[in-house]
Image 1 (cartoon, one colour):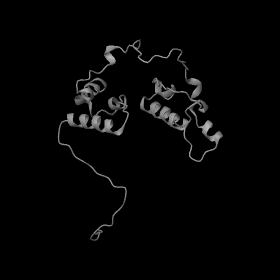
Image 2: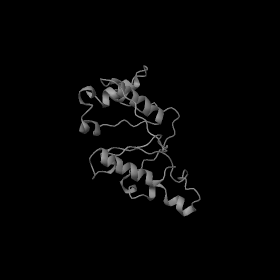
Image 3: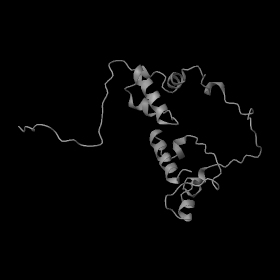
Length: 163
C-alpha cells in the first residue's frame, strides 16, 4: 500500500547512510510482503492508471527485487529458525540489548560522526524511536539539555537595540 516514491526515497536514504551510492538500498536487504495485485497504494483522487503506476512494481527499483512465492500455507511456521545471535531476550531490557549490540562502545565514540553514521536502528513507530533515543541520551555523560522549537513566530516584546 506504499507509493513507489516512498521506496525510492528509502533507497536514496540508505545509499546516503551507508555511503554506498552504487548498491540498491546501500547494500542492505529489504523484505517486502504482500500481494501487489490485491493491495494497491492509495492515490487520493487518482485514476486507475495513476494507482497502478504508483505501485512498487512500476518503480525503477523493481528489476532488483527477487520474487518468492509461498506454496504452502502454514498457520504455525515452526520451520522458521532465526539464529540466536539475532534474537533479543524478552526480559524487559530489549532497548538496552539493541543499543548495546548496534552501538557497542558508544560511550567512547558518541562524538564520532563517522561511527554514528555507520549505525542505525529502524523502529516501527515514533514511540519506539523516542524510547530508544531517550535510553541512548541517558547513557551519555554530563548534563542533559532540552531544546525546544516552534512552528510559529510570536512577536517580541520590547525593542531591539542596534549598535
